[in-house]
View 1 (cartoon, helix red, strand yellow):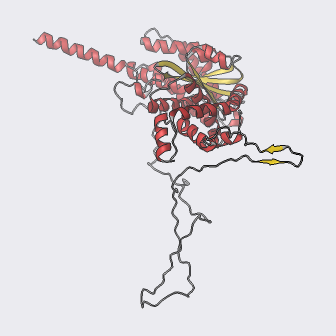
View 2 (cartoon, rainbow, N blue to C red):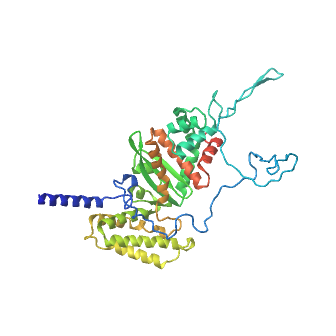
Length: 436
């Protein structure tokens, strides 16, 4: 009996050891949704700032402000003295105070009828008026409805069924899911030139971040790819995660740009001026290795990357060209660490450092160019919306649906980077008639 218990304890200890070796979202690039057991939050790459929670001293807050010219004024004037009861009519009132209420009026659709008339000239010719561009059917939805559909579906992630309910319950408009699909098709056609222009600007820029994430299309695995910089976001949908997707959209690569990415080979294979590995990915991997093996070399690499990030924040934009002693020291330490003997290290530590040795020249590019970021967080933000969309809608239903989403989201995110709101972007796209 004792021997059975001892064997059982050994089995449980082995199971615990294996569980501790598993990667999770805090020590690797695995998303939180894949965590089998949500870990504690003490492995974040962020450090405590020492500041108290809430708004900080000097923070410029925003509050609801009154307008100078309200749409409606309701005057509240006394008509009888509350003290003696005398009639106050005929006495000049004096404004004492005012308050405003911001509200939304009841929403009801407006129907605009276009009528074509004719006139007969004295020569006998009958002249007939023409309908304006865009008025093609005996009854149809207007541009504001179509822009709202694009905004709700792509900007707010609403699936067709929820949009159908919202238009019926809130806007009092009967809208079928087939009509929603057709509107998104037309909207994508309108913005196609804008989508191509974003792609061209990405291709000609000096900094590009690239990333990809998996999604479902009617049960099949697809991928969202993104290439972005501070002014543009280009998102493409593809049925594969291979290098051929990059060749399809950027056949010559990025001849003027530094490309920031993780260690995925397709990105590192892309032609560019230089590559920069995402330090956030590296630090998460190091957190995992330190937790798993307590490797001193993993700790040294983590401290080295942390010092490099501190130096990045310290160097003024105009001083990258000159020699920096700290930068030279970090390089020397990195070279020594990568050249050190790894034979006694854990297998996973050796694998990690082997990958760093292979990509040695891609680790510290951000210390030489002010415009090169040390991480790929911008690209991760650019495709995070795809995960939110999938969480709300479960999956995309068709190839055209996912392609349209990628196009519209690219335009929305690019305009947002340039200070234009998502709904305003959709409204302007419809008003401009682009693509017709």
